[in-house]
Image 1 (cartoon, one colour):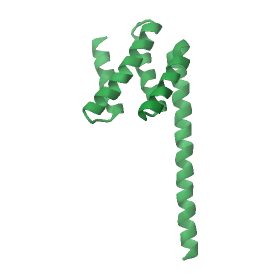
Image 2: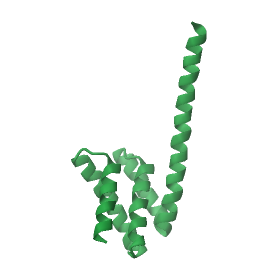
Image 3: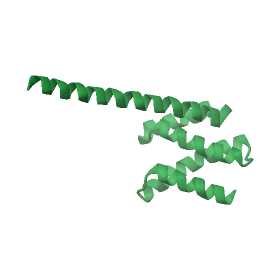
Length: 121
């Protein structure tokens, strides 16, 4: 009985540590992609994402990923970097607001916005 309890405890600890490592890697990946996508505005945008995390409990890593996606899409269609930075921030905010309003996952809403932008631009 002791061995099975020890096995279960070690298995659980392994699972928890594995999740920590996965989340840490996802954060580093999101931060790197975000920094490349946003460019010169990355530091300011990262501070804003961290402020949103502290004030609203929004995951800064997810915020940065979403803003990076919008920014990449906008600059890819020729929008200037300064306008794309502002628009991507506003679209990210809108994404969180409307996903909360409609009670859907933020990722789902961001995907829908990207599809709409592709059709508009």
